[in-house]
Structures are given as C-alpha cells and as structure tokens.
Length: 141
Image 1 (spheres, rainbow, N blue to C red):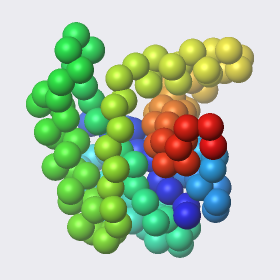
Image 2 (image 1 turned 30 degrees about the horizontal axis):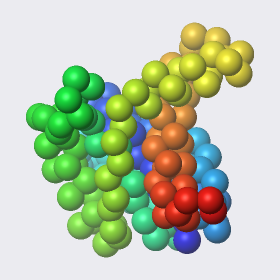
Image 3 (image 1 turned 45 degrees about the horizontal axis):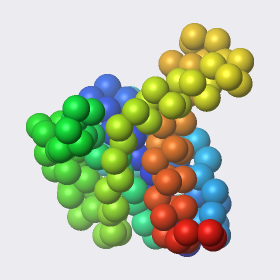
Image 4 (image 1 turned 180 degrees about the vertical axis):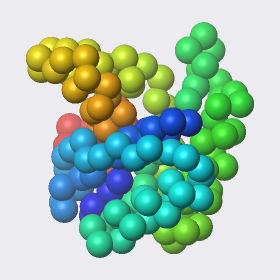
C-alpha cells in the first residue's frame, strides 16, 4: 500500500511518499500553494499515477495544551476537499514540532540554508508519514 504524507502550509505544501510496501517514507516534493483548488489539482496530478491508497495529513496542535485550534480547522477543510477529489481515506497525525525536527535533520545532513528551505516541508511530510506507517504496523513491527 503506497501512502502520501502532506505537511500543509499556506505558502508551501510538503509531500512525502512511501515505498510500494508502505514501510518507508521518503521526502518527495514541495509545491507552492497559490490556492486550495490549485494545490488540490497539483496533488491529484502527482498522486494518481503513483497508486496512492492512503493520505496522511499533519494536524497542527497547540504546543501548550495539544488541542486543535483554528489552524487545525483550516487544514481539515483542505483535507476534506482533497479526500473528495482523490476518493481516498485520510488519516490525521499530530504535526507538533515536525518542522523543527525536519530542520534539525537537514542541518545534521549538512544542508545549507537554501537547500534546507527548499526541502524542509518535504522532510516534515516524511516525518509525519513515517510515524503513520509505523503506527499502522503496530508495536515491535
């Protein structure tokens, strides 16, 4: 089962894709978001040829209390529209601190500032997707 991970942002949307077995997530692309409609069309054009069966979207949570706020509502509206367009199930996963973790990974890998900025959202999507894939396999898998 191939899956797609999405790190939604108002300016950029990071995408990650799993290997065909659904075991490993890989950073895939970053698309510039000009509108929801354009972003959904761009994602659909990328997803359909890849045989994606599941979409995982990062859900923003407030760091202080872990609750969903206005940003989560915004992402849920986008996710609902995307799910309707793709006809695929959507899973939500807490994205708290994923951008920070992605930046740290890129720095440790020796990425310069520009490379970090260009890849950050896709690496954040990879982190989200890998967490979802690991959860689906269960403990000790």
